Amino acid sequence: MAHVHETEALHHPHGSTPAEGALIAFDDFCFAYDETVALRHITLDIDAGDTVVLMGDNGSGKSTLLKAICGLVHPQQGSYRFDGAQVTEQRMHDASFSKRLHARVGFIFQDSDAQLFCPSVEDEIAFGPRQIGLSEDEVSRRVDDTLALLGIGHLRGRAPWALSGGEKKRVAIACVLSMNPDALCFDEPLAGLDAKTQAWLLGFLKQLKAAGKTLIIATHDQSLADEVADYFVYMGEYHGYGDRPHTHINL
Ligand SMILES: Nc1ncnc2c1ncn2[C@@H]1O[C@H](COP(=O)(O)OP(=O)(O)O)[C@@H](O)[C@H]1O
Ligand SMILES: [Mg+2]
Image 1: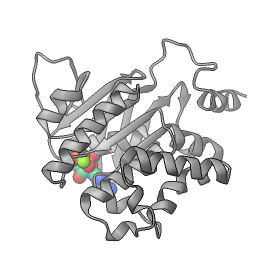
Image 2: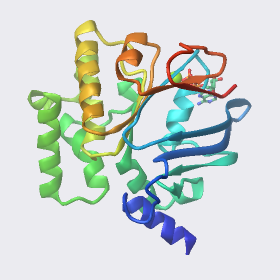
Image 3: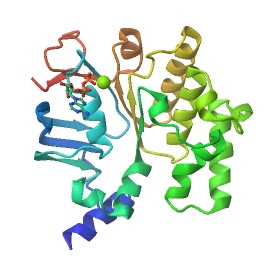
Image 4: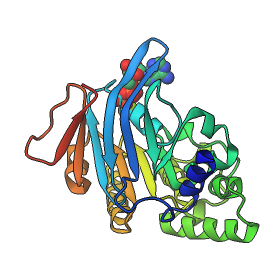
């Protein structure tokens, strides 16, 4: 019965979860890819509405932590909870559980090409809402709203693979936002973008923050970090500003 109860908790954001509970909670979470240990005894809480910036050297585990938040990798030891519900490999095999998690926390990959696979931008943005079983009316409303929000209505019928890097990034963000998630994970969002697109994205991240979204952003960009972070998570050997609110993990 515990299983049913916790699945329900994931479905009803403000239902049976204690108000003081963190949205994202890692407890002694350890993960290795075959031979490589990537996450060591991670204990970390992220509250709803916070903007957290992950900083660390290459290979310090930033991308793997974002994958864990989205239920894409699972611990060999310890646990991860999203809104009170423990996220395990077994539960992610339950289609209704995994769809609910993916609807509530989205991942914008560093490489947009890894994220885009549909024949048109419109299909790409509709994919997630269709997966969670929304009506076609609701799907098309979400597509229209999201195209407008990202300013990409003119790209609706285009093939994603044929877009510029900046356009692909907007489409990748649109695909996640069409699910209306509570939390968004951005992996190196500014990497590979031109200055104009970077400036747009910085403004857009601030809008998401102002709208109350929970943002987890892995970046090497100090000015992005300084502008949006409520606090920092430094990973591995990395030492950032000691005078900014921070926690240090994955030592
Ligand atoms: N798919 C993978 N298979 C094997 N090892 C991986 C894989 N992805 C990452 N790693 C390893 O896990 C560690 C953490 O990587 P990653 O999370 O990508 O760090 P970061 O995003 O901070 O650069 C590194 O040692 C990396 O080589
Ligand atoms: Mg990475």
